[in-house]
Amino acid sequence: MILAIDIGNTQIVAGCLEGKQLVSSFRLATDRSKTAEEYTLLLSGIFAMGGISPGDLEGGIISSVVPVLRPVLRDAVERLTGKRPLLVGSGVKTGLNIKTDNPAQVGSDRVVDAVAACAKYPKPIMVVDMGTSTTVSVIDGKGDFLGGMIIPGLRLAVDALSAKASQLPQNISLEAPEKMIGANTLDCMKSGSVYGCAAMLDGLLGRVERALGASVTAVATGGNSSLVIPLCRRKFHLEPDLLLEGLRILYEKNTRRGAPAGEPRDSGIVE
View 1 (tube, rainbow, N blue to C red):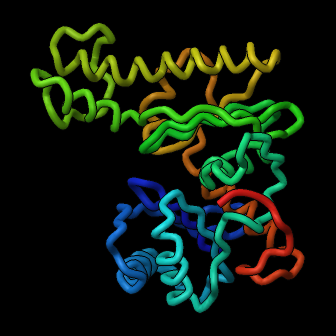
View 2 (view 1 turned 30 degrees about the horizontal axis):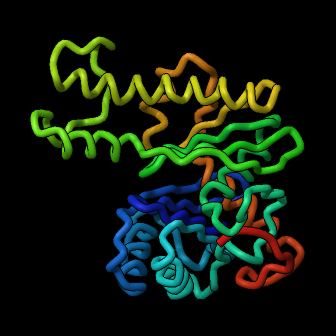
């Protein structure tokens, strides 16, 4: 069994995987001020609640878009399991050919998403990850990672709207109203947010298909995807555990030939 952790700007998503089976998953609030000792205690408590023994873990892998927390979580996992986890970054073999202007700038979460999507779905592929930001990643028919888009996330966009418009309510919940055409300010904001996001994704998929000149498989993941994707008119494959699956694939790819988890054999991509 391995421990897979993705450190996002708002939440840390983690899971224990036995082969392809996700045994347990959980989320923590991303706190840049916490120490390795504090995260060790949090992980230890969650493991205890789930009946998981750290001794059952053969290794771990971490991806992060929060650089300051990379060494913190690495040390926490090593303290808990006695094993140094693999960090997704420079030196990790991914199997992706990243054809952006600067591959080192591509977020590790986008790479992990792409690896998982390519393993499961036919190419070309558009991967949408709806978290603090909404990222769109495009993989062409040859498996090349071409780039994509970075868009303000749903929560971020709504909060910015409330903050900058003095007559609009604050702290609205993210949910679709009963009617698409809102009859009051609150429902108008909710409808504009969720239906607007769904329409944006439909439109972006069509534009990506025109740019590539081919039909594209659309895959969606991230915390807000289950809210928005059912409202889309185009077909999106909803994969809530895509990041954890991608981390499992990368762990196996970089350790299956006997390289220590923290010392992958092959050079590769992104920080």
